[in-house]
Amino acid sequence: MSTILLVEDDKTIISTLTEFLRSEGFSVLTASGQSEALEAAVSRPDLVLLDISLAEGNGFAVCKALKAEYNVPVIFLTASGDEYSTVTGFELGADDYIAKPFRPRELISRIRNILRLTGKSNTAITLGSVTVDTVKGTAEKDGHDLYLSALEYRLLLLLINNRGMVMTRTMLLESLWDAAGEFVSDNTLTVYIKRLRDKLEDDPQNPQIIRTVRGMGYKVE
Image 1 (tube, rainbow, N blue to C red):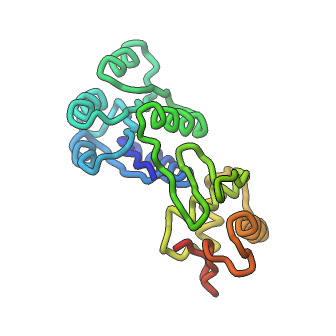
Image 2: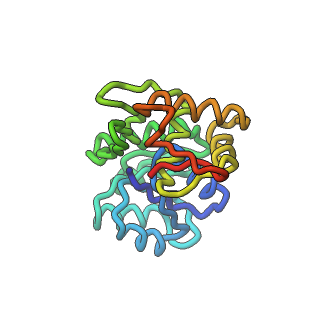
Image 3: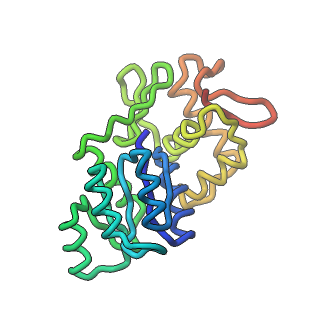
């Protein structure tokens, strides 16, 4: 699983983007200023999403320091669309640049593209005979594509990202609703759990990957 360091001082953006990135299979670290960002970078994230305007310091200084110390891929997030900011970012070694407000799917596409180009896309997760690649956005069983729908894939990633934890139906519904941008009903969740098991499990009636914890919810070991 790839780790993204999100350096941003807007709490609303941090909350929304963190949840979205996690729903897409990424592990997320956050920092609101220059000092926090440099401290978090010690954990060697695979990519940095970096705002230019920060509560403390600025994105240009953070980019320069991170590139010098870790040579980590950097994508600038900014509301500034002026040519100076764009050129300065690239001169400091930024790998890409996306202006706010941006479309979440476009951001994910750019993240995955940069991870592939920089060779940091070894993000395969194995669950028995099932392999999920969170950068390519694929799920295979015994080498064959499972052709998961977008909602099936997000549901699987939610369970994978919380491995060992019981995810209640309420938690899953709220997360899927936020990620899908549309209402997901309790009946819909039941249907998608069944569909996932039919595709993932050797014996869907006796699931070994997505287990039911009676009276609580579901979990992936």
